[in-house]
Length: 354
Image 1 (tube, rainbow, N blue to C red):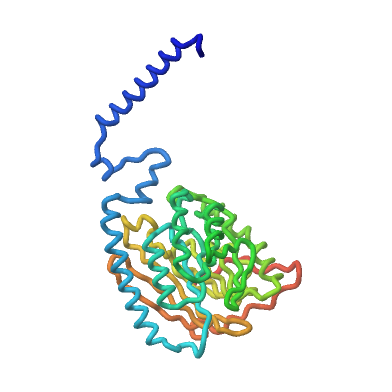
Image 2: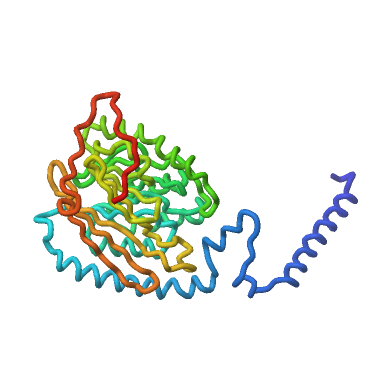
């Protein structure tokens, strides 16, 4: 460089001048008020759906969190006192949540329900995030706050990175093609085979459904060959588990953002709505209720589902409802067929709504 010092000096001066000009232009055009109404383009066009107006979000989150927590705590105390021993003995209590979509209020709601109903285990059937961005994965830090096993099944909006971070938490239990026994209850789970991180981007519905159903053979093989009988199958999209109708007692799922209960060939398919309401966009739209389920299994050598509670909270008004569904009264006995011999397959038709 010693023989080219003039060029180096010229290049340095030009570079510094260019940087200085950019800084001057930035200072001259900087507007603090513009952050209240940001404009997005390209792939960032989804951002308004995700974060909402910054000022509105920051103003409302604190008030909503405090108000909803008081309502949940008060209602749950009253409900549990009325239902002190409704099912004839000690039970295994499972909190089923799904489609949190990185909603801080959804996590607060789920933790309030877990604490109020004194559940033994939490089962999250996925879509814990929406866009699979690193910043969303910070929501994983809320999982240890549950203080009980947190069983996670990956949804179609969850990344493998998120799944690994859940597994690394002190109480996280990731099920992706395996079963685990917790407090006497054997749970099998499989992550969703599709990955669609961008909410709001059009998806080919038929192709997506076909991809989900393609996982049926793997789920069926696991359910029918596992050493310990499976008490609960957890998947994000119940189309993944259509093949186990008649082979497992209960399947829990989410994905569709609707509450639904259907019995097919002795198998109860339970969909929960969305525990996150409208997700992180809850700052913009409070019309979608927060939903969760508490499942009650008999504490016996072969646990059986006795009842479940559907809990919904309207974030706009704070009103909370709890509905008890007793299995024997609503559906009769859940009696799946015995496991088929090796090589046999189960039915693949979709459950019919009732």
